[in-house]
Image (cartoon, rainbow, N blue to C red; front, side, top):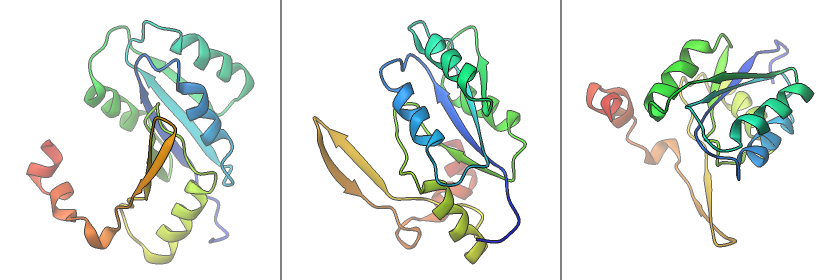
Length: 154
């Protein structure tokens, strides 16, 4: 990777994810690339999500927690996260997802080697303990679906 250290914000919208949020946060905290700030927007959770995040905050200075007072939807949460980020790069993570430990490092390497502006990564879905892989390679994704007006609305 380029010798210039870049800052990455991992943006996590959440709502009532007490059963998943610890594993989600652990997967970001255990990244091989360390210059990461985690910004969480809690869209008014009514379960133990808040307490879990606040406990993590006490142990990790790189976690920023923003709590909404009412549930306004994931679109609102994502917009709040975008407004809060000041990093060179942003990575999305849903609060019920986990990341491969090299996700950020490999993504940054690829971005710096190719100069791409947007990067999609492979996904592994789990259902009842079994996993199956669904890959989205850039060559197979219609990028115009995500960059034209209609795509942005959806």
